[in-house]
Amino acid sequence: MSSASPTSRLQPQRASSGPLQVAIVGPAELSDVAAEARRVARLLADRGHEANVRIAMRDQWGMGPLRSAEAPPPDLVVVLGGDGSILRTARWLAYEQVPVLGVNLGTLGFLAGFSREDVAGAIDEITAGRFRLVEHLMFEAEVVRGGAVVRTELGLNETSILAGPPFSMIEIRLLVDGELATTYRADGLIVSTPVGSTAYNLSAGGPIIRKDLDAFVFTPLNPHTLSNRTVVESAARTYELLVPRPNAGSACVVDGQVVAALEAGDGVRVRRATPRFTLVETSHHGYYRTLREKLGWGGGLRAAEPGTTGGR
Image: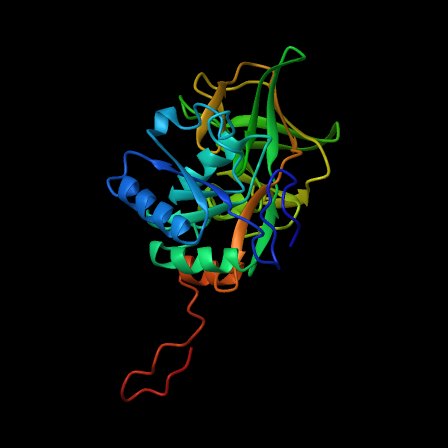
C-alpha cells in the first residue's frame, strides 16, 4: 500500500479534514449512468463533499481536463461503468493521476470493484479514513520508425502487437535493455501489466499477476514454437518489440485502441511510466475478494451425489 498522489488531499487512516472535491465520470451511452451520477452526487453532498459530474459519450471521453478554472482539482474520481470506463479515465488523467473509485454498472469489472449498492458505505469509509490507496503500474508505449518516435501512448492494461490481415504469422524480436532476448513467430504478442493480467493476457492463457507488483507479462498469441511461453519480467527494464516484416494489417494496440499501423522495420518501445494509477480499496473490498467473485473461485467441493462416496 502506498501514500496518495501529491495532487490529492485524499489520505487513508484519518478522517477527512474538509470537504473532498469529487469528479463523477461515466459513459453517456449507458442508460442509467446519468441517474446513478445524480444519486452518487447526492450521497456525497449529504456527507459534506462536493461533486462535479462529467458524463460524456465514449468518443468524447477525456475532452477537456478534469482540472480547469471552472472546477477545483479533484481529490477523488468516481468512475461509473466498467473496466473500459476506468481505462479511459486513466488515459484522461494522464500524467496527473488521482485516486479512483470504480463502480461497476457493466458485467465483469475487475477494476470497477464496487457495486452501486456498495457506494454509500464506501463513501462513509473514505470519509472516516478507513481505506487503502493501492498504486498500479502504468507504461509508455512508443512507436519508433526510422529512429524517430512517431507516437507515444500512456497505458494501464497492455500493449499488443497484432499480426492482422492477411492473418499470417509475423516475426517479433524482443530486446531487453538493447539486448536480443528472443524472437517470436506468432499471431502477435501481448505485453501486459499486472492490472492487465486479468484482461487480454488471461484470455490468451497468460497468468494472473498480483496488481501491485512491478512487472510486465509477455504472452505470445498462438506461437509457432512450443517453447515460446509466457515470461514475467521486471518493469525496471526497457523493452523493444521489433517487427521486420509486418502484415498489411499489423498494428500496435494499447488498451484496446489502435495506436499505429506498423510498417516494415518499425519497433515499439515499452517502459514503466512515471505516473501510477491509484485505486481506492476499503476493508470490505480487497484484491482476493475481487478474484473470488469475478472468477468464481469457489474453493469448495460439490456435495456428493446420493449413493456415492464423493471423491475427486
